[in-house]
Length: 116
Image (cartoon, rainbow, N blue to C red; front, side):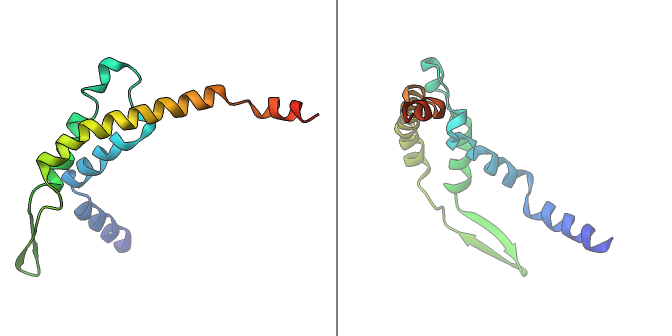
């Protein structure tokens, strides 16, 4: 099946180990993954944010049609690492308020019963 072989080869070329690592690092923005323990907050996402900072905070060079193309960094690495600390705490606080709201809102069954 030449088409499938070609498709698999193209996917493998596009999603290198480095690309998969960068994409996987975005898991730190998933609210379901946020820690609930205060002791875990300070270390939450440090490895992943460093992966993202390394990738997006450095110039990138790729070879295309025999010439090397360079793209400048899209963000300031040190600024990202600094802002992550504040942003991380805000995300965790937001998760806590969502969890609290879910716990205090009435269930569908309670709403239906109150309408009767």
